[in-house]
Image (cartoon, rainbow, N blue to C red):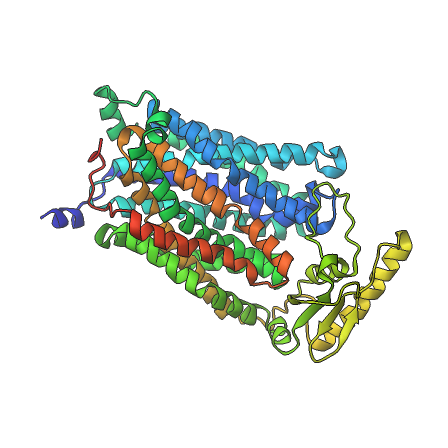
Length: 553
């Protein structure tokens, strides 16, 4: 009888309004947040030009990750307000904070204009964005879930889950349009337009959200005088609640996060940085994959109402972990067949005294990476060439071996300076470039040789993995915690998982690739986390699909 009621529930006008208003506002908020990630390469040139190119890009990724780092603090701060004051007013404040901080980035002078002040303000705006998003998601998910009937929470909250992908999709489309309109000026000033557009989106979102009513579950609890007086202490100071937060983090959201960021952000980064696909082409391909894959959020959200949240999320983690490396190798083969064939027929190896090889990250721009090993590796990294490492006898100069075609000796730059150093590097790059060209390594991906349908298929599969783990997660987290501390409790594991495990994925993966030279090595980070999550979640987490939202108040 209960199942029949579930299947024949007709969505009411109020439920439609709640879903639409919550989802639309969250789309705009994700749009604001993702603009930075999509434009990381340009941001690095605009705001971190005072350091070397590799460090600038890592800095840009770190500034992107900074927004994720503070999300748990936003979850605690705004979650407490949401549990004490109300869901509606809290996520109204978060969207205003997000919109204004994004607009400031669009107006901010670059490094050339105001020096170090530019990156400092940029990072501050990223921190404000992260704090706002930390409060936004928990509010929207809780608000929709508390308006949803039993048996439909997975489907209804899945609309919130589409917003992250829709926000990324919107940001990519706006960037593509602005690139077309501004042409070569996009990297000079055109990149600012998408950030400034957030003011328009902010006005629309605020207007819509002011029309909403407070959650009925929260309103009832307030009328009965059962509001939490100290939600942070109750959520994290009592073991019965804290253990659920910990299990939810390591048994659900950590794996969900790395699968999500691998399927969307790392795939984009991999194509542009490793496979040298043009930015515009890569963004368009990702956008098509997102467009095809997004309906699966609703499919898996609805399916979780029938067969359970836990098994879908953990299955998604396992499948993703088992197939990432073959999928990304296939992506190389179809997106840039020339580099795939070159890697297969003429792999590159750096043979060097390992004592001369350093991790080339320079936070203050003062270090000199001038050993023959450092020069060899940085030159290959700049060209996007994957390589393996082999130890040489102590003191011997590094050389780049191109299997089947001989080797190119590197040089020690410690005694060189100024024009002499530039001339020597130019000579070395020319010599290496000749050998790489002979081996078939392209300087960029040829769009005419790209197998576009296969690339889109692979990117769509990666997005479907995202929908498996992310579609049911909002309903799953909402159902785990009592109403009086729900906003606070569910927000923290979600944002630690997505803010830290997921948000740092591009930076960590890029550092792993830079350290080893293997373009696939960075994938081991999401693989290990996803498998660990599946194991922990299987043994520690319950199934919640049939739980009443007030069952453990």
